Length: 145
Image (cartoon, rainbow, N blue to C red; front, side, top):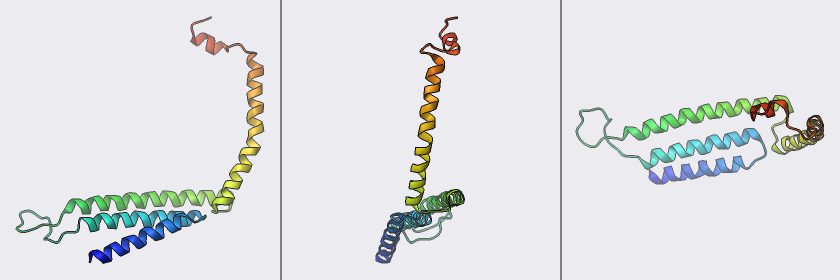
């Protein structure tokens, strides 16, 4: 039984890592979900112990309920994270019409190249307005009239 769990967990980790190396955002999220599920299964398998339900009073060996509660919490958190990531991918797709990471990176570079001249012009305008003197707000804040 332990060997079966180990092979399943290794396969899920390997598949998740392979998917996370792809250029598609949806495959990246699917890989992230698989790795999270593999981690949950690993935690459950590491604390696997046979016994009766943890209802007191009980006699004999009991199963550990803490591990089950922690994995259930991790499942809920990973579901919320996956839902948020899918919404963000949807917003990226509606704005750029692509989920390919290379295309998104190229679009980001083009946008930054278009924005750079504007920021340099804005900086020159600020320097021209101040003429090297501190503004009235700054001078007042230092206590000078």
